[in-house]
Amino acid sequence: MKERNPWHTPLTIFIAVVVRFSFLCLNEINLFFVLFCCPQYGIVLDAGSSHTAMYIYEWPAEKDNNTGRVEQTHSCKVKGPGISSYASDPKKAGQSLQVCMKEAERFVPSERHEETPLYLGATAGMRLLNIENSTASDQVFQAVSESLQKSPFSFQGARILSGQEEGAFGWVTVNYLDDRLKQVCAVDMDCSGVTTGALDLGGASTQISFVSDAFDGSESPNNSVNFRLYGNDYNLYTHSFLCYGKDQVLRMALAHQTKSGPGSISDPCFHNGYSESKNYMTLYNSPCVSKRKPVSSPADFTHVGKGNFYQCQELVKSVFDFTQCKYTQCSFNGVYQPTLQGPFGAFSAYYFVMNFLNLTDTSVPLQSVKEALARYCSTPWETVRTLPHPGIKLKYLAEYCFSGTYILTLLTEGYNFTSETFSKIRFIKQVSSDAGWTLGYMLNLTNMIPAEAPDTPLLPHAGYVSHVCFLFVFYLFGSLASPQTCLLLCFHGNLVPLAIIFHSMT
Ligand SMILES: Nc1nc2c(ncn2[C@@H]2O[C@H](COP(=O)(O)OP(=O)(O)OP(=O)(O)O)[C@@H](O)[C@H]2O)c(=O)[nH]1
Ligand SMILES: [Ca+2]
Image (tube, rainbow, N blue to C red; front, side):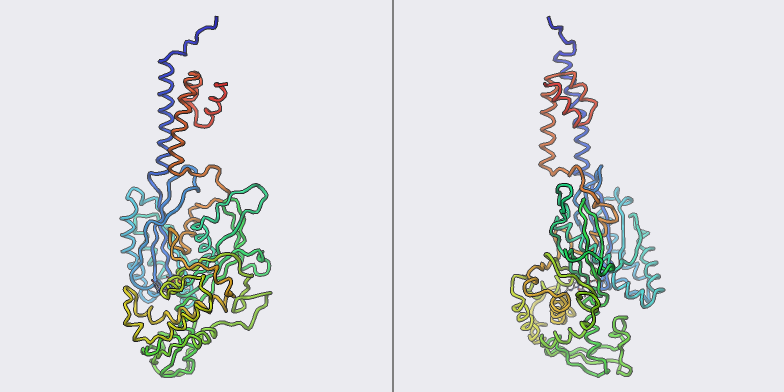
C-alpha cells in the first residue's frame, strides 16, 4: 500500500499557497513600483541663440535600466534673450534662468530633487560668442553654473555642444520619438531599417542629419557619427552650418544689401509698406557679418520692404556659395553631402515658420508652395499687420516672408530637395515630446539607450495585470498538484518555479 505523504494535508497545502502568494505579491508589488510608482526625472536647459528653454523628462524607475519610455512632462520658456546676449552683464544670464528653475522645483517631486540630473547645453549663440570673445563666453558659463548650482537638483554642468553633437542628438530624438530605433531582428541581419532624417533650423545655426546607404564616412569623416543603439549600427551623416540659422542669415542678407553703406535699402523679402529705421552697429555686431561692415556708413539706415518673393529668393541665394566642392557632391559652401535618403522631420524654425504660413502640408506640389509664398510676400504690410494674429510678435510677422523664402531656398538649392523629395519632409513641433536635440542629449548622458537590445522589454499595463493573474492561477494549481513543489516555490523567483511546476506535474 502506498504510504500517505505527511505533507499532503489541506492545512499544509493552504499554508504553502498563502506563503507563496505572499512572495508572489511582494515580487509583483516591486514590479508595480518599478513601473508605475516613483518615476525618475531629468532636466535639460537648451541655451539657444535666441532664447533658453527648459525641458523636464520623466521615465519609470527600473531595476534593469534602459527599457522605459522617456516622456517630456513640462517645458518652460525663459523670459528674455539667449544667454549669449548677456555677454556684457553675465550675472543676468544666471538670474534669467531662476523663474524656470523654480517651476522645475514644483514639477519634480521634492523627494526626487537631489537625484534629478540637470544639464545645460548651449548652441550656436554661445559658439559665436566664444569665437568673438572667449572671456565673455567663460563668464556667461560661470554665471549660469553658479545660478544652477543653487538649485536643489544634481547639476551636471553647462557646456557648448559642438554642431555635430547638436545634429546627432536631434536625429536621436526624432528617431526615438518615431520609435525607429528599437527594431529587433535575427542575428547577422541589418536591422537598422528606415530612419528619419533630422532638419533643425535655429536662430544662428542649422543642422542636417540622416542615414544614407551612399555614406560610409570615408569621403568626409568630419560629417560621420557612428551609433550602436538597441543592437543596431548607424552611420549618420550630419552637418551643422554656423551662421545659417534664420536670424544670422537675415543679417547676411541685409549685409549684402548694405555693403556700400546706403541710408536706405529696398528689401524684396519684406512686405510692401514696411519701413523701419535700423542701426548699422547692431546689424554688423556678429562674427557672421562683422567682416563685411561698410567702411563708411551713417549710424542708421531705413529698411524699406518691396515684397517680391522671386527677387527675395535671388537675394537669399547670394548667402550660399555654390562655386566650390572638392568632393563628389556638396550641399553648399564646399560641404560634402551624400544623396538624400528617407523621410525627414523638420523642426524648430522650420515648423514655426511653415506652420504660420499654412505650408506644412508637403503633399502640396513644391511649385504651389512657392506660389502661395509669393502671394504672401506680395501682401501689403498694412494688411499683414492688421490681420488678427493672436500672440505673434510683430518682429516675427515682419519676417515670415523672408523666413519662408530662406527655408525653401535652403531646402531646395542648399540641400537639393526636389519636388519629389520635398514630400518626404514632415514639419513637426512635437511627437509626444518636443523635437530638438535635448531629449537625445539626455538619453545619451543618462545611458537610457543601450547599445544592445534589452532582453526583457517592459510590460505595458495590460500585460502586467495578465502576468500577475496568470502566475497566481499557475502557482495555485501547481501547489495543489504537489505541495512539496509549492514549498520549493516559496523560495525561488518566478521563472525557475515554473519549470519545477511543470516537472512535478508530469
Ligand atoms: N515665429 C516664431 N518664431 C519663433 C518662435 N520661437 C522661436 N522663434 C524663432 O525661430 C528661430 C529659431 O528658434 P530656436 O529654434 O529656438 O533657435 P535657437 O535654439 O535659439 O537658436 P540656435 O542656437 O541657432 O539653435 C529664432 O529666430 C527664433 O527667434 C515662435 O514661437 N514663433
Ligand atoms: Ca536650437
